[in-house]
Amino acid sequence: MTVELMKDILKVDQVIGKNTVQAIIEGDILAPDAKPDITRVVGVDGNVQVTKRETQDNKIVVEGTVQFKVLYASDKGEEPLYSIDSATEFKQDIEIEGITAQMKNEVNVEVEHIDFNLNNDRKISVKAVINLEGTGIEETQVEITKDLEGLEDIEVLKETLQYTDIIGTNTSDTLVKDAFELEEDLPEVKEVLSWHAIPVEKETKITDGKVIVGGALILEVLYSGDDEEKPLNVIKKEMPFTHFVEIPEAYSDMEYKLKMKMEDLYTDIKENADGLHKVLEVEGIVKIEAVVMETQRREVVVDAYSPTRPLEVKRSSLELKENLGIHRSQVLLRETLELPNSLPPMAQIFSVNAKPIVTDYSLMENKVVLEGVLETHVIYTAEEGLQPIYSYMQEIPFRHSVDIDGVKGNMEADIELLVQELDYSRINEEQLEVKINVGTTCQAYCKKTIEVVSEVEELAEAVDITKRPSLTIYFFQEDDSLWKVAKKYNTTLESIMTANEIEHPEDVKAGDQIIIEKVHRFKL
Image (cartoon, rainbow, N blue to C red; front, side, top):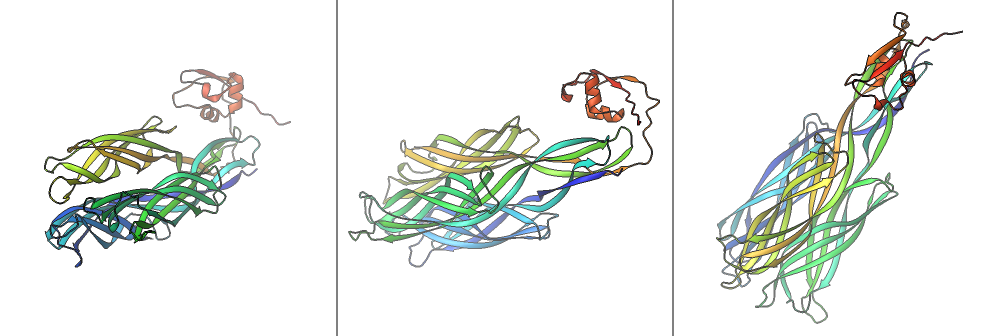
């Protein structure tokens, strides 16, 4: 009889290539005519927005904008601090050999650091280094053999594949909007100088066709006030939001990955009931990318033979990415920051921001150990002159371990960090204590290559075992399996286990003796 192969189809996302490049964005920022000359630059911050990404042959083309926020002090102005907004567009290729225009792409972009120089009292030159990580992904359908039929005595070896199936991906924007009145002890708002906003995941649920994201926008606003005693002020607010990301194939019990990025934020100053400019309207746009995944298990035929008929078995290689788990945890850091000797003593702290960066990670048995730093930026006033503003940056190193079952040293991990909470207090003129809660998302995975049966052909001649001894004593070797031994001696796994009273194939160890009986088959 002809051997019939029962086929099945696997949908697999294969990573064709990955590459990280750096782009240098340079430009000049000019002080607007309505603002005074620049005496000293307090700080330059940058935010990257990707406006377009396109997969082309052997590359991903990324277009975007770097939005700069400059804070500066001026001896010729009446305010202690001024701000300038500027934006520079960029276009960058990420070379990835082997990808084509039909493939999907993933792109992560972040600002590594910004250098600036005061050219004159009206112009600042800036140079931003941004990192762009691109991944080319091909959606493929792979045909596998799930069973064999046709021969009465065919022996089939199957293996269970466990792989991660990307059910769906979608990205959408949500508008986070609120208006709040300032507390009584705070002065009126003259100008919003800068803002820092972090979207934080609070609770996420997957329902039929939707990912429901419950989050909050952690907002800090620095503004100049209409009060000589309090010319600079900080407002901290938490703005809750709920957003639905449509993924039609999603349902509960699936796993998810979430990326949230603050795209832009707009503020407007309004009058309250008393006619004072103490109402701040805030509108923020948060980009949310949701990926829904499911762990699939399929049986696939990896070997086959017949004790009585010779078979020609052909195999093909199958590469799979197995998700070992997504672990979300928090790292609470408490550190004392020391003021650099070159700067004057601190009188009042106005703002502390922190950016987490993964510097390295290692995988060991059931554990991912990550190392990183927090780039902490401090803005403060000193006890000299008319509220002079200074700033400094200090790195806080940290180490954190994540437990994920099944992780080994030769596997890989994707790690994302986000500052979820940040509190600070001034200890004295030279020291500042910060307490920072860093949220971590760690996904560990392994790449598997497995040889699967693709074709089986029955040959004409029969297997001749007449010259084989009736009884063979076999010493089990280090790399043996009962299946290999049964195939070699043209018997069956069941026959060996019965003759040797073996309950489980994995119970047999190297050096054990097993009896192999010659089995005669007669047709009456």
